[in-house]
Image (cartoon, rainbow over all chains, first blue to last red; front, top):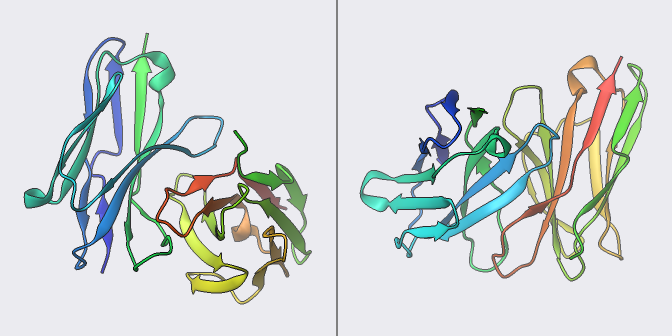
Length: 117
Length: 112
């Protein structure tokens, strides 16, 4: 069965600190996708990144970076030099590829990140 | 760029009433997903459609039904509303080429 675990319920940092959000997943499929979404206080879900199971290359986008390690079934997300605007709930999610169509996302329970000025 | 449009943004209903939520996917997206997010919870998958046919079903109550129309918009119909149905309801769309799901801004339903 699929499962996504975000063990950190809440994290509080001071602006300009680096912060890493952990995500551990379980799946029996060899082909799957991992995602991160951001949910700011306004409530919308904002897509940040998608990574497929065959691509373990780390990715950097501005202050955001992601570390995917299949050996530990982890897909961690690091924000460098955090800013107050980064305050949000961050969800890690998993979907299993079914040969063509998109598939439903299984979300973790989310990590609430509070960046203090 | 066009995004997923959901209406209404907010909806207040009383117990036992009926509600209809609408979703307009991104143009050329052929899959629609509905999610329910309770307060402080992660989004839970309800139901999905691919090319106007139901493709998957999650923890959707029997009181709820949904469909996707010929113009690809989708509606989630909720009857005999209960207090526990109060939640944020998201619609997401994607293409059949494993693109990421893009979510609408959600409809916040409050049942009193």
